Image (cartoon, rainbow, N blue to C red; front, side, top):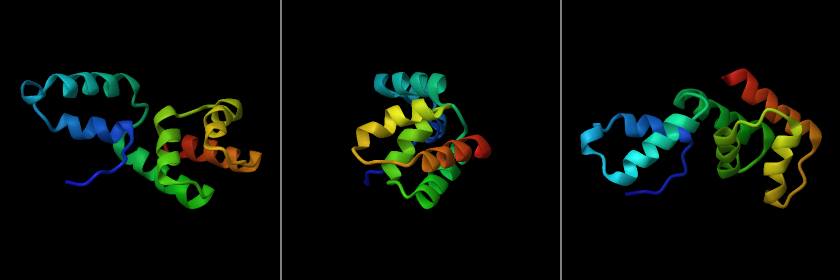
Length: 104
């Protein structure tokens, strides 16, 4: 087994491959959660993560956090990036939002 950080849409895609009657309780709760909160499809999420990492020079884990939340404004995005304890320029935040808007 290997550990890998994935987006909510990717979790949804993984769990959709499992029959509901074969899921344990945690898998069912997780599937219910991702059905409600995944804001894009798995392929788009993967493209967004790659572009955010490549073009905005952030870590994959940070890109995944952004894709999971899908912020719609600079202020909302800044609230999440503030916890990373590094300064991100406004132009980079604008580029992040543009990526989120164009890939969907």
